[in-house]
Length: 146
Image (cartoon, rainbow, N blue to C red; front, top):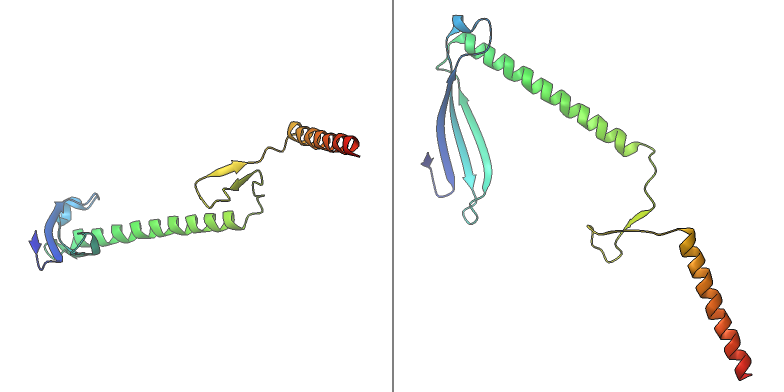
């Protein structure tokens, strides 16, 4: 680990192993020399930029070829998964699902708070009874004063 400046850190490390293939014994060991460079925010210490530099020149041709083929295959599979996730998200976005109208966000603006309306017959009956009681008291008041 070497600090190149007050904001750039360099870490050099090596990976050594045998490729998992039938030809592993023919080609020899795979040796990858990695140089990781980190550019840091001098105030917070957060990593702003991270770069990796890989050097396979210490390996023979067979392990290098196996490494690059397997890396390309892995990247292709992951790209396929990303495309499948994108298609799934787009179909969800454009699906004709009905929105849940029973739950609505808090009117005060708190996005984490939700309310559910109580649209039951009991609530409606209570509101009608309250309206009739107020109307009855208004009529009785007007009768006694007029």
